[in-house]
Every structure is written in structure tokens, then in C-alpha cells.
Length: 254
Image (cartoon, rainbow, N blue to C red; front, side, top):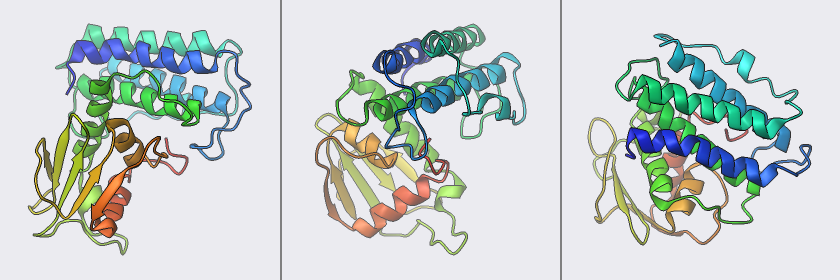
């Protein structure tokens, strides 16, 4: 995982990359990877999400906080770019002031401010790709993208991802390993135990996926790859794992 100071610094940096893409763009342009959204709504979502997270951290929330007032996509500020930058900067400052060990409510594993710093970074990265409509590789450091993939692997250990429910099969079985490879990274997802685990390793597996780290992150977020993912082995298991671990994504991909 990236250290806390780096995560806080990346929030305004990655949000700035997103803002630069859309500064002179038509806010009514559709966003193909977020069906039903236009560019203005995408920015409203990111900016509102920052303000929701900042409220949670600033108030040291110990229980879920409604995002209703922050997630209204019907309109967006006329000066949306500075509004977006302001929210990112305020969130980074609030997180930095709180420090990495502060206990707050989180909807996923962790229960500290680190969760929100990390979530804010990767939200901005993925929606930056959405704004670019997957036409260009953005200048996102590889270690940031790799951390986004590892965040996904951690969410994949949530009961919602692996327990049988709603007629869907569970993921755990004695012979199930998934292997992911990039030129500089290797991960194994282990589904053979009582809960899913992952490790940085290069091992034989039921299914093997090779590509760039950016395309691996795009793949789990149900975004199109820029290059080619090479998949060998049990593709049905891979598809089930991706579908089950994406339980927290909304229908529009956010």
C-alpha cells in the first residue's frame, strides 16, 4: 500500500488530471463507461464524493453517513473545475490533519482514515479514465495503479464477495487460485481457504491473466482495456470472481 502522506498528495494530483481533461469540454457529453451519465454529472459525482468523505473524516463519524446531499447529479456548479479542485484539496488537508491512525466509519475493511485516502485516489484515477473515454493512457504512476488493484483484492475478501447468496455460487473451493501478471508485478488470489486471501507471488493457478497493470485495474472495474489481456485457464472462474468482487460497484460503474 502507498503510504498515507503519498495517498493524501495524490488526491489533488489525480483530481487535477481529471479536471485538466474536461476544463474546456462540453459538460453534456456522454461518458461511455458510466452509462446514463454525462461529463458534468461525472464531475459532480467526484466532487460530491470528496465532500462526503471529508465530512466523515472531519466529524470522526462512527456510523454510516448519508451521501444524499452530496450525490445529486442533476446539476453542477458553473465553475466546476475550481469546485472540483477545492473539494480535493480540502479532503487531502482534512485527512492529513487527522493522520493515518484515526478511527472513522468505513464501508469496507480498515476502519481508519487510510481507507478514505486510498479510496479518494482510486476514485479519481478510474473516473479520469472514464473522462478520457479510454482513448489515451493518462499519466498515472504505476505504483498508484498497482495500489488500486491491491485495494480491489482487499475488498474481494468481504463476505459479500465470496459467500453463496441470491442463487449465486460461492467462490471458495480447494482447487481455486487466480494469477495476475504484469511486466513488474505478480499477484495470486487464493480461494482455497475459509476466506479469500491474496499475495504478491508468481504461482501456477486455475486461471492466469497477463497485461499491463492499468488494464488489470480497468478489467476489474469493468472498463475496456487499452491493450490486450491474455487469459488462459478457467475463464468462467475469472468471470465469476470479477462479478462477485464487483458487488460494491453501482450499475453506472461508479
